[in-house]
Amino acid sequence: MRFHPITAMVEPIDEYRKGGYHPVHIGDEFHNGRYKVLAKLSFGASSTIWLARDNQGPHREITLKIHRASASKNNQELTMHQHLSNSPHSHQHAGRAHITELLDHFYVNGPNGTHLCLVFPATVADLQTMMTSNHPRTANEVRCLSRQILRGLGLLHRVGIVLCDLRPGNIMIAAPAQKSHLDALQPAVCLPVEWRDGVQVDDTAPRYLVQSQRYPFLVEREEQEEGFERVVVVIGDLGGAQWINQCDEVPVTELSMRAPEVIGGGWWDERADIWGLGCLIYELATNRPLFSVDTRGVSEERIDEQHLALIERRVGADALQAFAVRLGNRLPKDFGVEHVKRLAEFLWLMLQIGPTRRWSVGELLETPFIVGRY
Image (cartoon, rainbow, N blue to C red; front, side):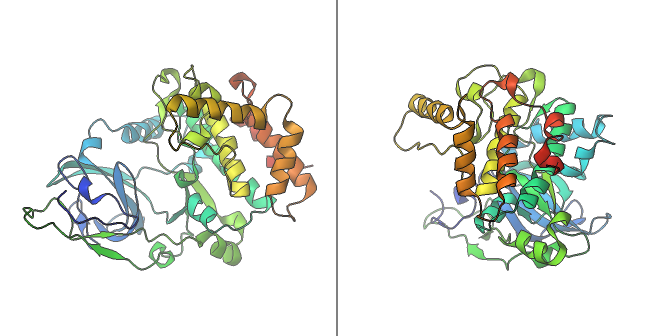
């Protein structure tokens, strides 16, 4: 241990080492001064993510994702974005507006190695921050979000990609173009990095770590000021994606959103995304996971057994009526009886235990709940 612990919600300080994160400070410049760091957005196991100013391009503010050195060579996220950009199917597809666009990429050499940097349009919130606010959703909000995510997922499937990572934190919310993204963030909270006595101090770690500056109530504020119809969401991280015809690795999908065929260790394809989408939309609508599995002190085999048993109880062959009642009990009282019925039917088409029975993205986009006619 080279550092005194930092217990706040920041990346692990001990991962600032060879092969690890690149040390970044607010105000740092990258790519020959083109990008200047303005604020911290988030962090993940393989990267830190920052809001930066683009001093040359048409986008005034951008998202700068700086990968760990160990995750920078043969990077899957870069490969997927390049494939998406080069596919003739993507340019006129309605889903293109709902997958974050790779604007630029470059490499930076630092004390911990060579780091891949990806540049995307600026987003300052995700659906996880919206859910944290515990704000009850209306049918129209759930419909708008579902339609946009479906379109983005449809494009990925069209070009042969399985996302594998449908979760609230991977659905990004774009702020209105005319507003400064920095204005929608909280002030920076900087936590000093303290080296332990007797440890050789070097430049592998930053002087301080920064907590995420994302504002948890962005969607509510924009809803009041602009109207929810104008909120745009995009699929963010493609780092865990796999090719449809090469789904031979255990996906990065969160445990609660894994399809039965994935849990059972069987063959799977893009229809595992459809299952995950059903779980995601249920959680967005209710602020509760559909399948909450206790993993404390339990073997992986036992976790899988409990998960599959829970799936059978919640969405088994004869469970639609009970599922609809459970859903209705978890939605706001003013959601509307007919809306509850149509949402339950919509989710049911995705939450089929047999993958061949799940509806495709194109079919789901034509359902009464999404079309809004019933």
